Image (cartoon, rainbow, N blue to C red; front, side, top):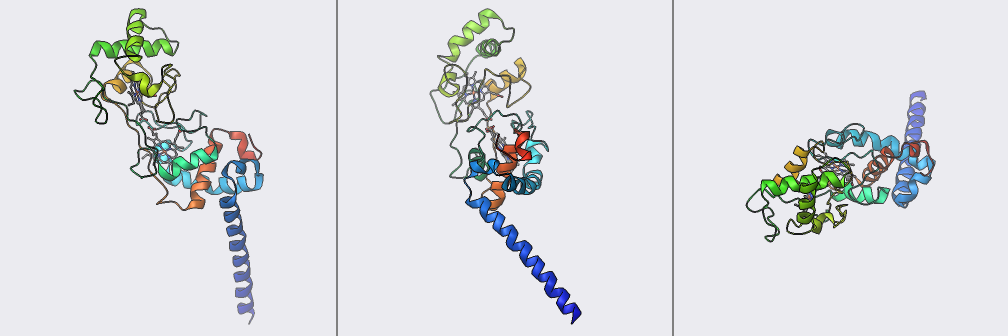
Length: 248
Ligand code: HEC
Ligand code: HEC
């Protein structure tokens, strides 16, 4: 009798906990994603569950602190610099769902960095012509100058002409080389590199052999509430104050 009562009581507590959890889960799902950081209780709940999901699914590429890996073209998620969107929870959630160049039909349909040292730099656009090693060196000098670093003046001047003309770089990275997040072309004037250490060598590797980073689509692997939780956690990585509750 006593055991039955005890079991019943335990079952009641379990049910209450489950109900409570699913209540918070459904509140999380119903909320406007960008309002979550302003709701301390919901934020704390999402973070407590988003972090383990991040460690399980994302850390292998993005690093346990979201620091990224320039050896593999994996961006840092903790620096407030976004390739896609503005870093709002809703933008992050969109990337996490469908990925980047992930072959998911709803993934961002993005450009690919052509391989200019090869006979056919772009499989998609036959108008893009190969560049000589000298032209690639000049473009690197131009990028160094654009980043405010010491560069060879004559090379940079020739590189500027190539960038805005025959090289076709402006078409994706924009005339001012600040990139275009709509097609995933990074800002080339800042010193934040997606690939490599930003040295002359790594810049010329990008131009010569091309780049295409892939972030998997998670919509088929993580349930909707988990995707939102992990998106909230990623949001918090570049805004440490948001972890203590309160919008930033
Ligand atoms: C068809 C569009 C396209 C064109 C044209 C293009 N790029 Fe890119 N470029 C990209 C994309 C997209 C990436 C990022 C690839 C990724 O996300 O992995 C990139 C990456 C780069 C990078 C690496 C940046 C980093 O942060 O590591 C450099 C350097 C670069 N491009 C320089 C150039 C130069 C110089 C030209 C012209 C000769 C050029 N690109 C032309 C689309 C383009
Ligand atoms: C296989 C490696 C890999 C895994 C696993 C991975 N990513 Fe990515 N992720 C990438 C790469 C590479 C890019 C950059 C793609 C590009 O070149 O534009 C990226 C880009 C992103 C971006 C866009 C960053 C920006 O600057 O706009 C977000 C957000 C992101 N990933 C979140 C996640 C989350 C959350 C997970 C786990 C659920 C995850 N990723 C798992 C490789 C990975």
